[in-house]
Length: 397
Ligand SMILES: *Cc1c(COP(=O)(O)O)cnc(C)c1O
Image (cartoon, rainbow, N blue to C red; front, side, top):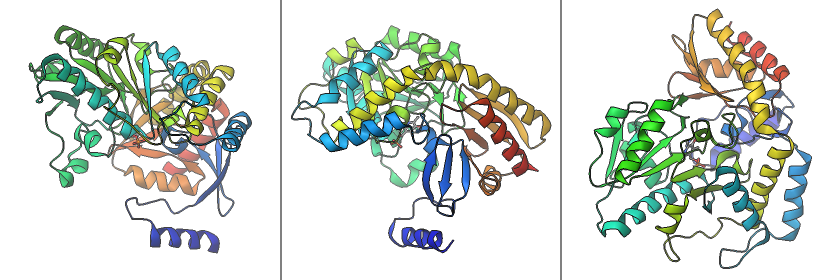
């Protein structure tokens, strides 16, 4: 107890206070469970915000990283390194897309996607006043470009002026997107499944409609798969369910399963007519440690048949959450796809339920202002779902 209090005090004394953290300090993990510095066990249905897809303590993953640490961690992009090409090839094969640029985070992947869209349009007409359409209630990151396309006034207001030429439309409302299109529109950016905003999957009609608008007007479609991608939806990338291929895709979170890495991925048309040497760079991006992690994640996804597993276990989670919604007046509805699920709460604050859950040894998080979010490691079993439901019930009672 004293050790934990000391760690919390040391952190609060020295780390800038931009998070109201839960008052536990996590120390180690095994499978789907985490352990804090008091030795208390938690079932993890947060996965470090949809990151740790493979669960904790996967030996093959840990050994690959240890091996890479002993060989080489960093080279810069002035040279080739061993895992870089293979990591990129795994992404192009899984997506059917053409070229990859590795970043260190999700927000940097979005920055890259915005630059790609502007450069593509610039090469067409040489003008500097192109517009991007983004969605209300979206989340794309905290750096200034990504924040500019994040439809959340609370996050944006203190930091204005943001980048110009951004217009907002309503998610799943094709007419509202149409209304924002002008001859200056160069891209439409959206999450295939909105995550932070409250777990809203795009409807098929909407996604196909947006794609058609993009094709008619030579506008780039940017799909942000940072949270919903990498198997979480029951497809490697959530857009694959709809057969709507983006021009630019962003990935991060589960891409390295904990090693900080993101990427923006371009189709052939966009790769051929956008960024060239000198246009974009990164010191760390694509370094051997990060790209070894990416290679290992893809290998283990295949070996453990993670995508198929998500398709098998997700209906059980949905059924159990639906039963919970039926049983409790404070739970209104469930939405989501695969292992990215949200339950809408009324008359109670999600934060209060989450604090109770933590007391009961369950880690869950919120999304939007009134949604409980379930983004567990992708390796969960029906037994984990049962344990989660039991602990959540205890927290609701
Ligand atoms: C988390 C997230 C981001 C930002 O990623 P960071 O790695 O935190 O910069 C962007 N888009 C979506 C959809 C996200 O969920």
